[in-house]
Length: 252
Length: 221
Image (cartoon, rainbow over all chains, first blue to last red):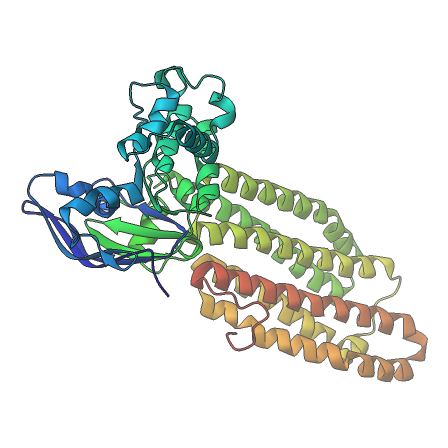
């Protein structure tokens, strides 16, 4: 079986701090993988491995193999990092639209990537907004500022912006934690739809969200990947006592 | 103690109270059957309303537990098994009530020889012991004890299988008491079902504690 993403014995240090310890994981294409664990356990650090965002932090040292489509993304040329980041879109906890119009937020990545054909950009913006389940709500106000729409809409706009450059992997770092239940539900529905075309990794503190949206779940604790299995197994009969304690709220 | 653990304890206590009530119903059934105490039989029928009320209370408590606390893993298995054990216990109480109805509807004392020949007394004893042991197994989370009911369920099945032949012998031996023989045969059929319900309860206890599904599997029992 060929995996979309694979890590083999990955260790990551922030200076002397050992943030990820010998983490190995295989991620199947077009699935949703939830990364759970208490704050500081390394799950966001793990997520940031795949678009090499950790590289931007001073003093970071990474060991082990990190592969996307069987290619070690830490052994590519510096010039290929941009391409890597195009292929791995990222959505953050707080919606962070650019101070531009709704249209321009989605079109931005396309222009940066050298696409200037107006018609092509319009088509791609519409497609991305539809994929992000936002088109119907904004199609009549595309020229308005992105800050004029609600937080939930802004987050879906950020997802549309990530989708516009047609990535294959979508990294989501607590994408719904700042949203109300209705917006959260929309994001979750969106994740369910998007997994038909994308491989998704989501960091979440919400156990119910992890169990609702993901196919696989990895539980991190103090930099260790304690358990990684099908979500159904993790939430019904986990193997490790530490996982059981965490998901049932008895961690302390 | 965590809020969740408090809720689990409350739900467990409710089910154990239900269990105690069902055991009392069975004990009274045994006494009324052996002594032909029709008043006691009527008391069992009357108490059946309390059992039904308990069942509804526990159903509601399980529904609330799932809706409000969104349990997972062992907590989820606990509430699912509690819900099913609750249903099984109510059915056992129904059976006790059905036996009591026979006693209160019969106008003459049942011939002791018919009862012992058909081994209805032995079946009643086995059934009650199974339900009592299962309560202990649930309370102590002891799956080994829960598994002991499988052997006794098999014994009940075997006694039920030969009951028809023994009934024919009784019909021949006591032609004036044919009605009594048929009543005892009906009671035996009901007791066999107590065995089935007990086996279901044992499976739920094993599912909750060991996370194993033994339903419809012979090798794991």
